[in-house]
Length: 408
Image (cartoon, rainbow, N blue to C red; front, top):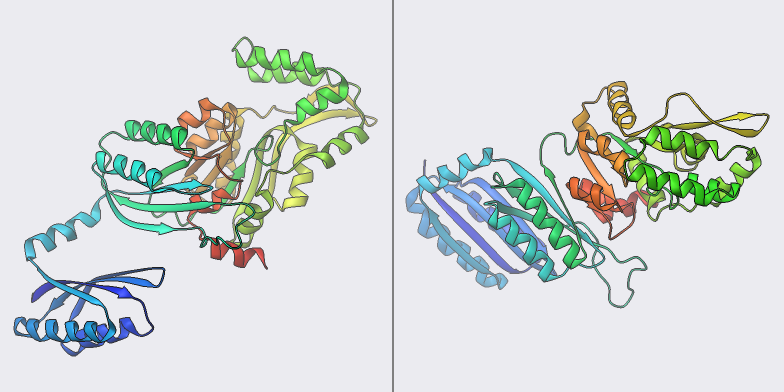
């Protein structure tokens, strides 16, 4: 092995810069061991780790590189790297890797500092930082401001539960979402995304709207409170609430469906994911008549929800078939993964309620969206500062790619 050197080049970016410096190295038959580059506001930072086969060439390379840098107005720094430290660096490539994503309407230095401090406290190293959202204009501000930065970190956390708690505390204090998940072969190969429906895809709880229409809103609220207090289980509470809907007509259900507001970003996230080849499913404790409407409107492949029993166009107050609760959602996710010949690690689940936790916990990427506190505490990934399309940034899709797909 020859001499190893670390070359750092910085200054104003220009076309052909990489070609000029690598041409110099090529003249001396240099092997590139690692290379990385970042450009921020037309200023470049280029790093090259290289092996010089002939030690006597070091001074010549140093002189040529400095001269080229002087001509281009760039700073060039070349330092030797001893073989032992190089080998330690090589061995470190087997470390665990995680992706940590910050989401918010804007991202401040203080927010980044807080997150970076937790990363350091856990003994992790930040290997790369990437901005996923577009450039910000002060002349033409975005109607829906959003910002996302992604950290690629290596190492094993000292205390992953403490890290999650620290991120949650930062999120609550600084008004930003912080998500983290393991960076592995499955991260870029997920192909099935399932969503809860009520308060996730739509900004409403359908059973509440139906109860208001039937004039039994207060009674349904009391049953819901009883279920949340643990006095009755979900299935029993659901049957009791549905029983109160007896007498509603088909046309009234259709009227409710047309008036339900979609969650911000629902159109964009489903369109983008479909264009990228994902299969999409709705797994809901709500009702099939709404799910089928959304399937047609947004292009979903699968819908599983509860079916209201109807006779001659009138709700009987009963449910047909098995009630979809939290455990059923998890079971359905496994079934869909198997049907699509995917491992469970290749799936994504998004929801807001406690009955979404079973599917969120088993999915390769589980996301709490505008979630209740109990759900937010148990999920490693959350979106609350932007619309449902924030999921695209968690997956690692850049805004420029989203815009290209949105114009198709």
